Length: 462
Image (tube, rainbow, N blue to C red):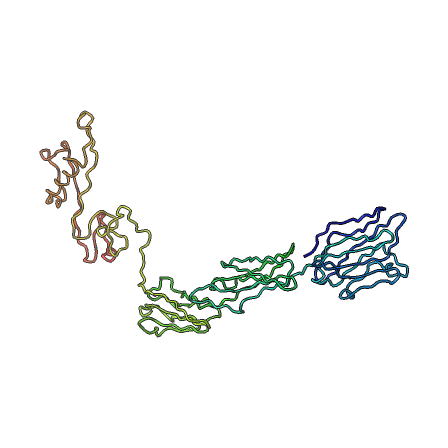
């Protein structure tokens, strides 16, 4: 324990005093001055001797003495490291007003309270005291727990790096800076010389994600920051995936391939290919991690392909299922039929089953559809009642008209017919004529159209 002193100014009755700093500090190995100046009176008193003493744990130990008659003396263990700053102190007729001493190569054991005492005649003794604090800058280092860290299948946490701030005084504070999710532990050890060693371990779960991640240790010592970094080297089994199958391997496609990609540390040394429930196709060429399928795609290429990738840590597997499809051609965009958005189509290609390019007839051999009945009929100007539009979809309207025409199926076969007055319901003595051109003979491989043209059955069944 040390005495904490204020700057004591010891005044004699006639004005003598000893001037000193209240405290001084320095680092181990450095140099420090302990000031001691005697302010004499007028007339001055006679200085008989100046004595420097070390006060530690209540015990005084002589450090250096300056005596006008006997000269200067520095006692062990300070002899090689302590000296008086002013050369005049060592003269035959010394000047002892300034007896500042200099400590060189400061040591932790030098930490104590130091007393500068003046013996005068006839005034007696005058003294003051300074507290000397010695700091020890720590040795900071950061190390990996082991040069190579192996990711374990059980995914347990382990210490990957250690940061040490050794033999510091006062002790340091250690923190970590990293993107890794982990846990830090701390401990301190107090050494016999008064220094403190601080340890901190950083624990993570090793994996491929932690590989090449940076880990930085930040040591704060007094007002200084000391940083050190390491990059983790984590070894792990291969992570495997197979590339190359785009879902569009169709018949007659040329020169397709599959590549086995593996992320591994250390790198993969062995790639092995196989086809589940079968042998690899005969047209396959294996180069490193790639399967090259020579020539055209056939159904023989279908199946589940497996790649085993092996490195120094282990073996992992990747697979892909390859399907082979027939090459299909879509119809040109010019053939579009918005009036049949939901009808089934031949071959699933968007063409209504009963639709013929250019007319509203069904396929060959069927009856032509009856021409549509107008929604509104025009009446003479002199008939007010008859100006009302015919009702469609109700009784006597469109549905009734359809039944009438169905009942007269035989009449539909006639090239020309009229609606008689007695048979007319809504037509009011007017005549409707339906004129059809006579049928012409056509070849067996042709189909007639309503506009008078014909197309081949090959064009019809597209």
